[in-house]
Length: 207
Image 1 (cartoon, rainbow, N blue to C red):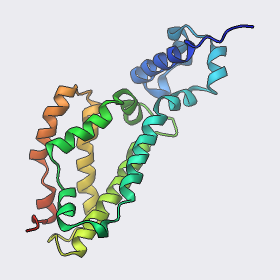
Image 2: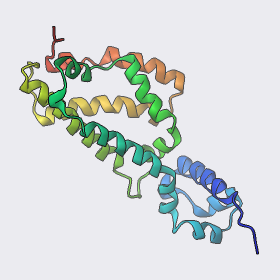
Image 3: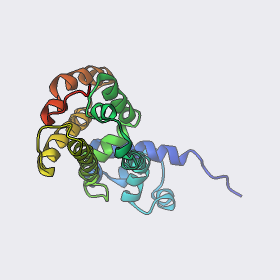
Image 4: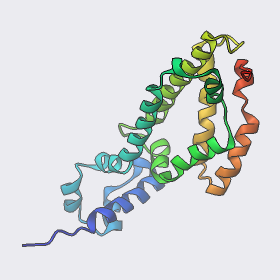
């Protein structure tokens, strides 16, 4: 009875990751992946139905973690927020920015695959869809503040979408440009200088 080669899967995953990062999903070659990993095409197809399933195996965990993040925020009962907590939710502090970058950096390659290399897969619009979900959540925070009379600017959903989409792009673009961790830490400070969402919506600090 033959012993299964348990080294095949990690070799395939690493070779696939390198191929997809370098060429993107559409131009990536399963032949190249098999050659780089020293795995036969037969062994690959025993594990994955094709190129897209292999790609998804690389990013599924990252997708799920981002969906879990959205679900956690969507479950918040804003009516129970104090005015101070609501005000703080509009803040972009250096520490908060670093924590967000850190959550993406630990899965940096997988995140880059999602936002830069997924064209042609079921995840090709994931970045835009996830950002839209976050924009909708952000707008609910704004509406809650507006209902309480805490903001002075009357922004439509589309106007607020443009604002928050621009903010979220500040956290994605550095990964397109392959920032180092040191660059991300420094950029966290720059974001705070660049964005003042409180002023944009007319939200004064509660006394």
